[in-house]
Length: 301
Image 1 (cartoon, rainbow, N blue to C red):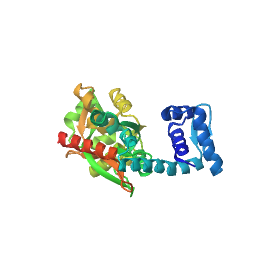
Image 2 (cartoon, rainbow, N blue to C red; image 1 turned 90 degrees about the horizontal axis):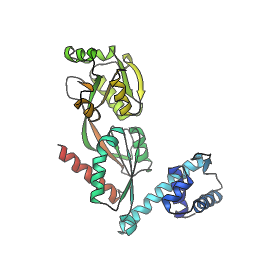
Image 3 (spheres, one colour; image 1 turned 90 degrees about the vertical axis):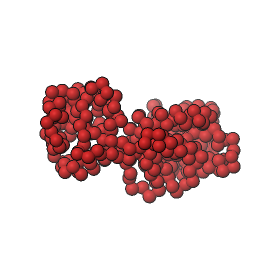
Image 4 (cartoon, one colour; image 1 turned 45 degrees about the vertical axis):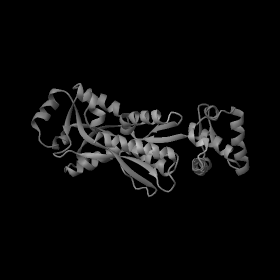
């Protein structure tokens, strides 16, 4: 077993394709297949389940992947410790939940690319639970998330204050609600579209509703959706109201496509976080990314 074999295996696992892994590593597909076959023979296990469209990990493959990914991360840290040229052309792996990924990271990554043009990054979008799991399992270097989950290996650093608001269709019924209502008890009388379970937005919305005395079980939740843009389109079509980031609704509010209503008497703000695995040394790339996020925060304050 050697690092070249593990690198080939990890790339196939992450890209779910031998051909894509070969392109990533600048190898031929038979060479990648040979590396994987050598591992399977040495360990006497089957690593992948293959079909006509993609490959997936077996249970044994999942177990090996966790160890192999950590070994490759440690290899990168060794290069960085000795200022190797390999480290200067590194690829930072990022996981981000919906709101940071779609509305904040484009600016942060643009600054990163301008400052470090030789460095690459790879971005995966997930819900907050998936982001934190990826950071905890070290399948990514850094995460951006909208909530904190109990993972002892994870350190959370706030970088943005995000306000959650109620977003409503811009029609006569909801214009009247906006003009006449003073609380949010009316939410129990209207259809509501929620983010999916595992979403940081949903977790924080439910937390804030409870603070306002709303019994979540009494809400008429007509749909659970993963995509914020689909949710906004559904609100515009009159399917229901939703609770989302003011940042995500800004453009539609500007053009009066939807209406905004405060989530309670007080302004309700949640923190968005940079998250990293504190059980491993942060790479130089992670430190630089965090520094840019910190600067981004100070500019907005």
